[in-house]
Image 1 (cartoon, rainbow, N blue to C red):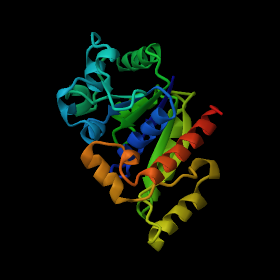
Image 2 (image 1 turned 180 degrees about the horizontal axis):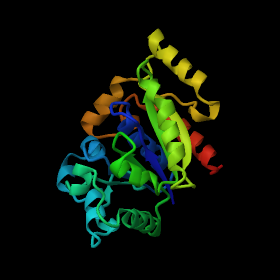
Image 3 (image 1 turned 90 degrees about the horizontal axis):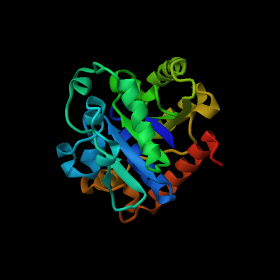
Length: 255
């Protein structure tokens, strides 16, 4: 099983949108995929299943050694895609204070999912590289960083890459997949120029070729609790996230 964390230095960059639609792309490709909501705000759950606030999930698993992964999985309309919601509030997610044995529980999470035959685990993390996000990155196989195509947004990217590089000391197997530009508005010169600027300051391999546009379809899909690709008119979104999936597979050596 491969675990991919979706992380960002700041919120509002389309992180959850990327996590949901990328997980859908892997599931659609036949990979047995689990999307884990490790953001205390429960963004994935709120986007895909309105009752998620009432369900046990990731933080319950971290807090209670008696909780098993199999009891947390929430099925979707696609047989190959399941969710694990954020779960109930705890001292760990509210205060960012690690409970004892977090690293062990995260390793167990990975092991239990692998034992269930899961191929891909995608984890939507909270913004920033501390608390639960740092713990997830300490056990993940790879990390993808969404970044909105806006002038102020790209200033923090080099620092985040530096922090992730340092994090590889604790987790040498962590593959930094790179930055995926989101919320691109091709009709705005400022948005296009931001994309060009990012590619100019970053090594070519650190910026994904696939670019996620800003679009009403993503908002409508979230309101209906669906990945954008399954909406009417979602064919372009399906193709876009298939391209992103293939890029990731290539970088991880799947193909």
